Length: 364
Image (cartoon, rainbow, N blue to C red; front, side):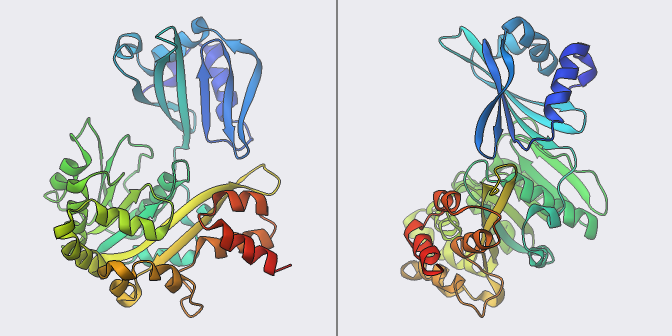
């Protein structure tokens, strides 16, 4: 961990001003001989009126990692960096045949957001009251999955006497013990991989397991085993819908094992949250749109175990008698009606754009 007091005062003040700026943004891009850029809800915007020289960048680079110059010869490096009330995930890399250097920074608050502040419905807490099973959080890169997972774990941390074990690459929110024991493990520092970290964790008396990302057969297999054997597992995937999270998880298994794994998933799945972030109607804030499917009383289990019926989960989510599951398009339509987002941005993130277009035009 880096102590920001090691930075020269002028640079520290400049960075403090930037990360504490009231404008909503998620990322900072500092590139040699270019203007500093920040990623806002409406895209990248420049900051300042003069390019940043390498000489100006060096004190920051050395504060992040004193051996940065030697390490980036072979590959980019990831380093956490604490600045005031923010945790910065810094990626230092070379470009232009090694002649230029850049730092890609993602900004996180030191304290996880409360579940109430994420934009998720209050009944999501019902998922976290379950003591065993699998919760999948999915969506594209930059959709706020890390924030959602941290908020969920913090809720458990404040309401349950348990042992939470996380496997992350890198650790992005550092949780502080409250009601629960917290064991955060970083790949590859504390464990060699997600799959090995998860297997090790099963021998460490966990109640709750968090897997930063399901990437391979070994991790998928261990997640299913953990969910089936009495642990609450929260895991993330990169997919474009809630249903595709289920199909992607099953796709890690060979065809001859898929039916058996599908039965295990059908029995242990608590629910899936797919999420996306959109600009607010005025472009000043980010708004969460979330699609959800709950497996209450094994309601969607028959669809999971039969590959020919998986697509029917989307129809199940539209049933009005199920007031917890909901489709992304229904949520987008509601956000438009409340004037929280505009239709153009909604159509950009919808995976079923034709359906959303028809829904919006039929309301006119």
